Length: 67
Image 1 (cartoon, one colour):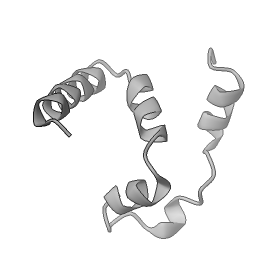
Image 2 (cartoon, one colour):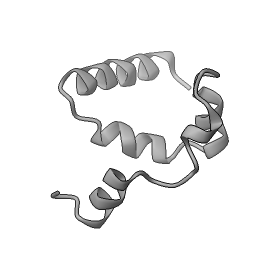
Image 3 (cartoon, one colour):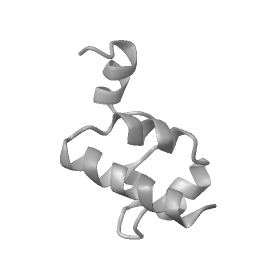
């Protein structure tokens, strides 16, 4: 993968986070295999914190994106 493209994507992610808009980042992460996401998480995150199910807020957002 092109390093310039990665750097541009990282800059966009930083801008989005600073603006509080995580929508595009969430869509990007949906394309990442679950094993890679799990490998990315800090070892300090306890395995029982994530059970593979969306939290209630995500369930509502999936049900009604305008909530």
